[in-house]
Length: 332
Picture 1 (cartoon, rainbow, N blue to C red):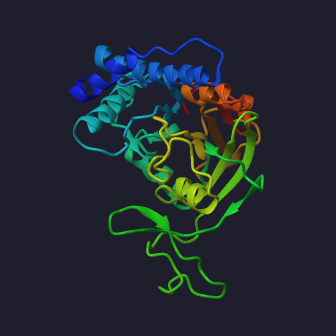
Picture 2: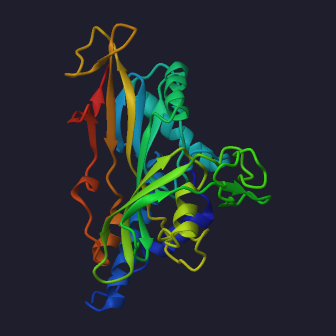
Picture 3: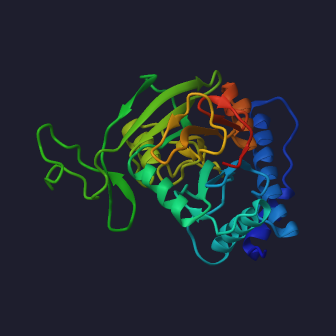
């Protein structure tokens, strides 16, 4: 796979970077920068030298119906030309490695700089079934973000519609007045699907050294840049590295990670079902699959350098079937 000359020059300059090894505050920042750059260089080098997408070893779960990966920063879910080639190459590799008869389908998307759990379906019928769960809001998506500042309320719900301006930028919509119809143009958002969305948040940890907070975020509904806009524009706590909604931020990575994905899966009757699995009309059983995706190394290092204690469950890839830890492979 070819990489643009501009990208090669960027990574070459990053490889030459070396942080000073002192114990001052500035050196702590330098060491963190070095770790981030090394991660980025390793990601690029694997793409250039091996010709394979940098994600082949990051499968969190695979079955007859779906594949879940831990998406790295920089992988584009919907794009064109070279970036599209990278996603296509990854899906082709997954199909080959696991012997799927059909091409894998994208069921949902993550922004280019967002990392974490990303689900693909192994056939058109499985894609339709999974997409239906997303549409009916039966899928629970939880994210972890590092934000600038401290939150006065340690948990809460952000209930604010969003809209898209003429340039395509996501903005806060007008709150819907109590008793008013959401179709009322004077009170509703300009975007047709921006009402009825919420963001549930909970503080997981705070830095002992600076104004940083680690926050768990659960999507109710879903809208482009929902978490980023809600945090930056409603709470006034932008995500670290979000240069779009906080232009003053200079961090090269966006510290937003899809840490878990929770979805119903179907097990055929002839297969052994988990205990307490719910029966279905088709004679088999369904089970609840929850996949935990560990934080990327640069995220962990940034938190360590800046005194943010990360909960243990964010440091490992763990698939759970009806709440019980399972193997990453389940051919049902």
